Image 1 (cartoon, helix red, strand yellow):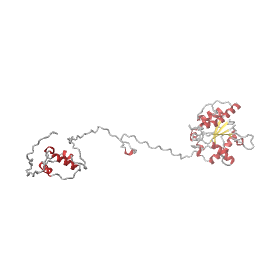
Image 2 (image 1 turned 60 degrees about the horizontal axis):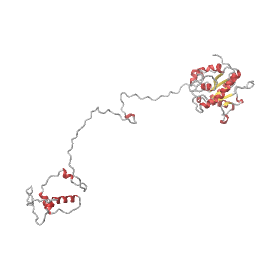
Image 3 (image 1 turned 180 degrees about the vertical axis):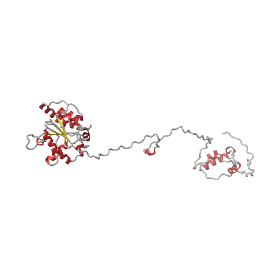
Image 4 (image 1 turned 30 degrees about the horizontal axis):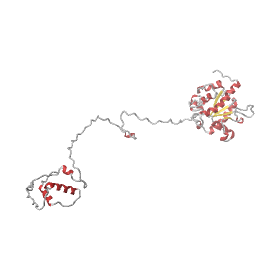
Length: 347
């Protein structure tokens, strides 16, 4: 670093007119390295700010500081103030930009509706669709149907090949007068799949069956109901003697009981107790169980075949299982009609 000669004839004058401090003649000052004491002041200031020394300022430093005019603190000086005992870097403050308030037009964004789980928090618009009212169930009928309310009539001409015995008429059957009239009933489907009928007839052909296939229909209970579970055991048992009398009078070759419940009622009346599980079976029953046999009669009675129920409400057996039982009955009916030479009459 090159040497700089700085004139030092007399100490600087104070601006405030105060008398000059005495100058110590016995203290030598290095004019080149001290810069009139400013370098020492800077070093002493940094040392005290960093907490490296606690020594008081020298008399020369106090005299030189008194010669400098006092000035107000600026932003640069404030930036030099240590925070938490650390020296901070001085930065030049940038001019602040004026805030510009932005106005958004009211039509800039459409009004949105936030959906929540509670429908009460959603604002209802005038064009909102009305809510559907809960589905009302039909009240139960106040009138209990009787046998006189049913339009169904027995089809039992003499010498039938097979007589079908149902539990009782359903509501639609009693209203229309056609056997097994409900669409969910499998009676007409099983008649066709078993070979008893050549086509699948509608319920309206109920009264054509004797002439076309030599089969007929009756029921153990004449009172209509929505399903067989609405009948009591006493009501079922009371229909057994009536059924026996019908079979004895018309003498069909065989009787088919459409449903396990009918055979259970017949068993209770004949044996005075409920049938045991190991005693029940579908298909042909023992000869001792023939129906319509009376004392002193030369007729041995009609063999009994127990078929599955055809109700659509009964789900205990699958359709293939039901068809297998009915196929056995159908094979016998076709065989008997061939052996007897039955010929369908024109209707």
